Image (cartoon, rainbow, N blue to C red; front, side, top):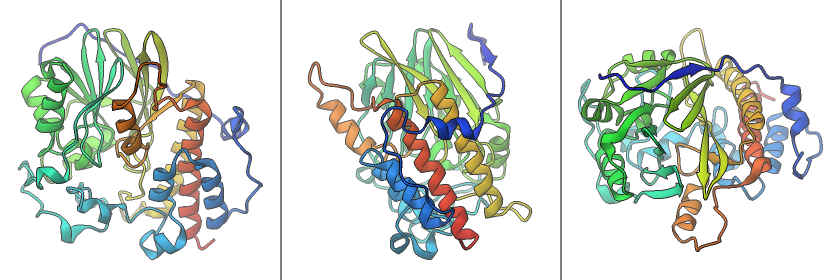
Length: 375
């Protein structure tokens, strides 16, 4: 791959304290719920209070009420995979990761390196949307791809499936007036095929550099299906600078062993906002004999608390996700397309709501752990 005048620098490990996170809760007017016991019900109550009317999709996915989640949860939200299979293969992932559900509705697992048979296009296709002056949504109905346009090229965050990347990412960029040949970097948040499956095409066709954590490159090595060649390895706190934009990536293990969460500057009409992208949300953990669900819940919670403090320090006022039901994309994308001059950007939710998004993530994971421990 040819060299580019682009530099990658390291910001180092961002040390934070849980106490600082909790002290900042409600600083911008969020209601403070009464103290709750350290039980699944208590943590769920805190999550419900934090979600309010801003994050119902996230809450419903990772912290459903007991009657809705039941035994399938094993830690709230684990049943997402079964619903995902009907949405074009959400349940497909690296072999041995412990993701359950949905197998009956999936296409057979392809041979190593083969392209997965595509579901009918009408079940997954969506049109691209310009969200900010430098940020575009290029996903499909249930999964998101984000394109950061810079003065020196394009950074793609997540790549959906091998069967949909051409339609949604390559053709989607053309529809919004951008040239896919200008893709320079591809950040893959984690090594599940609904986010990594399209990376090989972008790597092979456009010579884009692909970034992933070492742990999730290793995860891909153990998987079947289409995958990129091992390329750049992301370290914790690493900054990626391309032209006039700098993204900062943090290792937040939990959803997978090396999930990446990212802070992204976004711009509109000369004003800069900060977007936070939590890289892996559901509890379909990579289970091994020495690292079971309890280990991964503890790891996930620690990562979520840390990233919450990171986004607070960055004054994040925008939340984006890699599944459309987590960040309200299904409501915000139509609202964005229908904006009139002078209308507020629906993606700018403010620092308080952005902080509460991560509180939902944390408290729902604590509820899952409490259930696992019988509390």
